[in-house]
Length: 538
Ligand code: ACM
Ligand code: ZN
Image 1 (cartoon, protein in one colour):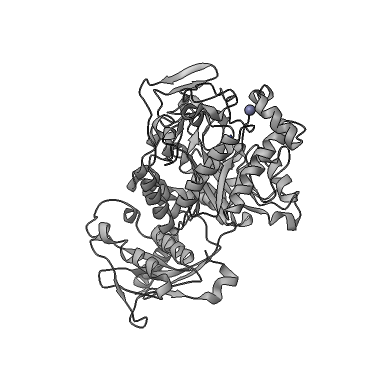
Image 2: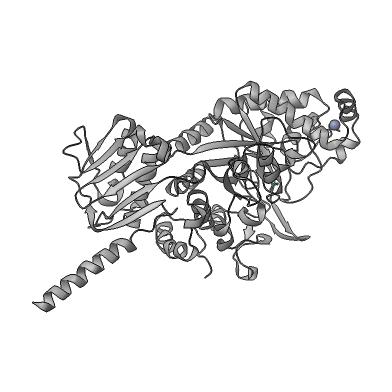
């Protein structure tokens, strides 16, 4: 008898331990108390939802279809339901729109949220506690769809939890973008900056300027050069653009996942593809070619002396504003080489007329004029931190990439800031010092997973009031060295999981060794999702 009691206790302990071991949620929830036992889903599980949260209930109900062969039935009666989605606006003060409460006992699951996003994130937490196959594409006979009993109270640290994808230098398909959005949603990331334009290709259809895609989206070949040496020259074209219908489809797909798409129309530099299509946009008006080489050679930029330049930008932005419902639009503003402006009579005339002292002020004039148009249309602009040079536009947000200095300056000026310092959050940087062991050429700077994880977007030197202007952080995936979709994934995952945790979880609750343990489960899930992730170094 003693032996039976001993074995039973051991089994119970193992079950509790096992339940705890199954909780590998990334990003780490604000409050989590593991219980004992499990809730088991099956074909008879009933779901009830307040009408405000019915989409999220449907999402959970359909999550089992592929893997287990059944979906959950939705009932109107909360009393008879096993899973309850309860809209509770009184939670707004405590948890905000994106927070949720999730209470799992062996016979009931209760989700409470003050907004749809919160309920959506509760579903993502459930998904991360279910067997990894639920994220996959195949049925699994006899799979046990259970999750451990747990109490979670959760909400994010920052409102901007971002990922940027450069679709100019390497052009990914609509399906590939959707796959990134799916993974972002799983990790509660909510902002996707779509870098649609650069020297190496214009990727957005603009009805008023057909040459942008007819000429600007066409590149005869790709040349990747590192430190003067050509590493890659493929002799095959990398052509393509997203039609406006495809853009609408992606925007809607993202919205269903509570992700806002921030389009980036990078001006006045990073614009040779546009100048190739409409040469009159540059100071000289000379013909130009979409760049094949993926680095350097960035001196050909838009002319701020010509009125046509601003007419063009306003026309393009008008179509952008129609396609993208986001409040914020990225207008670039980075790395403006000003040599061309110095030799240009249109630019000189503009400087005289506008009483501009130097070329930084001319750049500032450019951005301020674009901001004025955007504000008139009810939109807010964000730009890379060079938009501080020569004077910041009155209402602009700043994306701090050359380090934190720009972000600190902008926060002190009471402007909203997104931190993306390149040393900590640029995913094109190589992941290990042993670069010769890496399967792909990458940017020379080293950015291991741990460094991303440990990054804290709020600089110590800001006062508490100034700190409020840091609205979040973003990891940027530039494609100067990218040749395939798998390469994008290899550079992005799992470093994007670290970004998810640093933007959601409070700094003092982060724990890198615990995070590394949790990654083992994510790697299994990535395997199911066919994601070409890079296993991190220990
Ligand atoms: C940038 O990396 N040029 C923003
Ligand atoms: Zn000019």
